[in-house]
Length: 448
Image 1: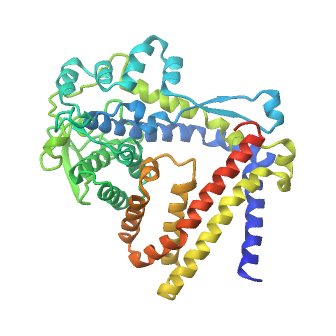
Image 2: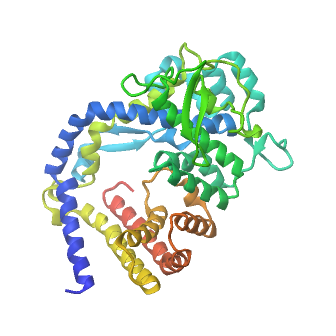
Image 3: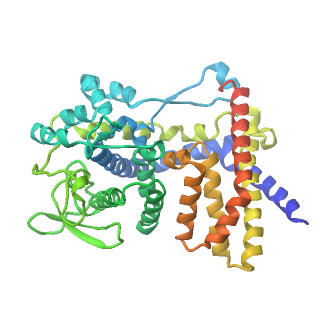
């Protein structure tokens, strides 16, 4: 049996397995049951992850003047509705509509709706709404804001091409939250900062703050940012002490009093003077409603409310016939398209690497394949949050970042250059095909 024949049989088997595990009626009931089994654990775990992620993003608000309405993790919100009978007949099992944080605030906190919604769109209103007056008044004059040439004051503003702006609003936080390990996260941030000409000191500063905030969650039980069965008391001392891994991959121990220490304030020898605020308030956040954790809870509750909809969302857009016969399911075919494209790309990688390097070990070969598949995902996947900076880069910027990232992981740069040349045309074609197929599928269901 030839290689193409083996791939065809493999693809057929994957289609069948995917339907049985995710798209069939039996799979939907099994997943629905599992959501009850994991609900308590997932609710608690998501509280930790969502709190960590959202409170970390306030670094961009305090240091760069970016309101939270523009920061992607604050906007991953959906409403859940049942379909109409007509929609159900077309295979719609559940309706998930993207909503804004305004809608969630209005539903949960109608008594504070005006002040909380204003705080989402304005850095100054945020400070006035959630911070003690002395701290807010001291901080407001020094907040950096988006700059305009021949208008803004030098040193009090930043200039942001779209890829840079997306990095500060989205990609930076995705790199830290999907990091794998600290070195991997640092290498990603370093590569993108270099290729987008972001001030190295700013990249270092933001990275150190975000890794420190993650360490606080574990090492120092903090007001509104700690969990009795997860967080430890801070180390003994005149004040608490927290240890984290900095941008140079060194372990650093610093005094710690409050989360604002890492969100906005500074430490000697760790943060450059241009990128921190002087702080002398022990706990600058208000303790009477509305409080900052109400905003965090709004996003977290929206996530928790969607947990039991997972089964219907996974099996969505299928009629009864499609959910009971795998050969009738169009969802299987939309799944098969990117899988077949991935197989083709992996074959190109395998042949190219073997022709240049001869025999290589399976781990190295898989790394080369992963490198190309990462490009494929960036260019064609519609569901990955945090890729904003990468998607808005020019072709040369993306290529340079990609080469730096994977060569720093130990792959041969010459081989990577050859792979990029070999697959770039295919990647554009595959991305266009996926978009057209997805649009065709949704229009057929009356959803596009």
